[in-house]
Image 1: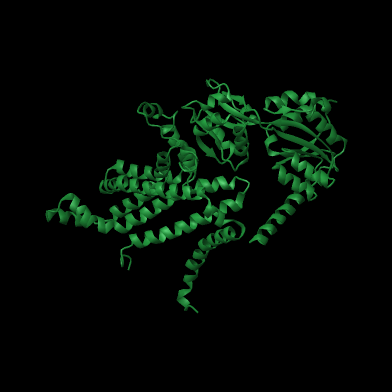
Image 2 (image 1 turned 90 degrees about the horizontal axis):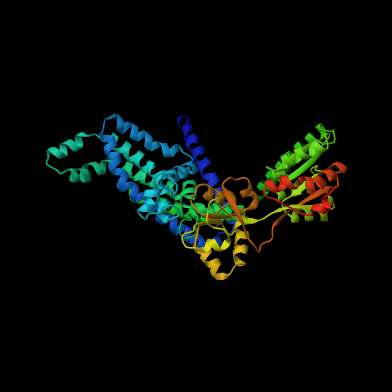
Length: 264
Length: 257
C-alpha cells in the first residue's frame, strides 16, 4: 500500500493506462481479426514501409540542417520579426493536414503560384517522392524547430561569451559548448519530427498522391486498405506492423539520443 | 473484443430500429417510408418534389444509407415501404426472405473518364499519349476495381501506355475527382454521376464494363402508395431529372403509367 502522501501516483498510472489500452486493443484486434502474416508477405506493405522510413528520415535530415540555424537565429534575436516568425512556424501544427496539402498545392501545384516557373525550370513536384518529403517537412519540421528554439532560448548566452573570449571560433564554440548544452532539446525535437513524419497522411495524400512504391507511405496504405473490401481487418493488420516497427525504432532512437546520465 | 463489437453493433441497431419505429408511430398519416442508397441523396429530393406535384397528398420519409446496411435493417424488421438499392444483390437477398413484393431496375450509372471541358482528349485512346497524367482508384476499392476491368478490355499496348501515365491510385472516388478539380491531372476514372454535378468537366465513355444497376423494391409492408412512387421513378416523367444527374434511365416502357 502506498503511504498517505503517495496517492498522487494513481494519476500518472491512470494516464499511462489511458495511452496503453487503445494501443493494446489495436494490436489485439489486428492479431485476432486481421491477417498480419499475409500483410507481412505482401510486397506492397514492404514497399510502403521502405518508402515511409526513407521519406521520414530525409525529412528529419532536412529539418535538422535547415531548422537548427533557424531556431538558433530566432532564439538569439530579440527583434519583433523573430517572435513573429516563431509564431508563424507553429501554424502548421494547428492546420488539419488535408488543409496543409491544399496550401502546398496552391504554391507548388501545377496550377499553383509557382507552378509555371517550376515547370519552366523542368521541375514537377506533385506525385513524386520529393513531394512526400515536402509534405512531411511542412507538417513535421515545426516540431523540431519548436523544440530547438526552446533549447537555444533557455541556454545561458554567457557560456558562448566565455568561449569567444578564450579565442574559440564560432563553429568550434557551437560544436563544443552550445551543442552539448542544447542536445537533449534537439534530440527530443528530432524524435517528435521523425515520428510525426512517419504518421503523416492528409498532406501527403493531397500533395503527393498515393502510388505504391513511389508515394504510398504506410499511412496511405492503411487508408487504402480501410476503404477496400478487406476493410477494417486489412487496415488494422498493416497498422499493427507500423506500430511494431515504430516502437522498435523509437526505442533505439531514445537510446541513441539520450546520453547516459543526461537526465539523472 | 469481437463479442464487444457485436454487442455494440446490435445495441446501435436497437437504437436505430427504435428511432425508425418511433417516427413511424408518430406519423400515422400514410406517408411512404423510403430507404434509399446514399448515392441518390442529391437527385431523390428533386424526384420526390416532382412526384408531389402530380399527387398532392403524397408524403415521404426518406432514410439514406449504404445499400447493404439498409438491407440489413429491413431484414431485421425496420419499417420500410420502398427500398431503392444501388445494386441488385441487396434486393435479391431480401426477396429470398419474402421481404420484397415486387421489384424493378430503374436507373444505372457507369464508369467514365472525366476531363476538363477544353481538354484535347476526346476518346480513351488519348489517355495513352505521353505527358498525360491520370488518377484512378486503387484496385481494392470499388471504383478502382471497375477501372481495372475496363483497362483489361483494352488493347494491351494501350492499357500499358495508360498504366504508365497513372500518377496516383486513390483510396476513394471523391479523392480521385479532386485531382481533376485541382488541375493536377488531365484525366480521372470516376462514375458518370460524379461528373454530372461538376461544371467545366466533360465525360468520355468507357466501353466494355457493365453499368451499376439501381433496383427498387416495394416491401411486404408497402402498399399502393409505394408502388405508385416506384412506378413514377421508373417512368417517363422522371427521365429528364435522372439524366440531369448523370443516371441512365432503364425499362422506361415498363414503368410508364
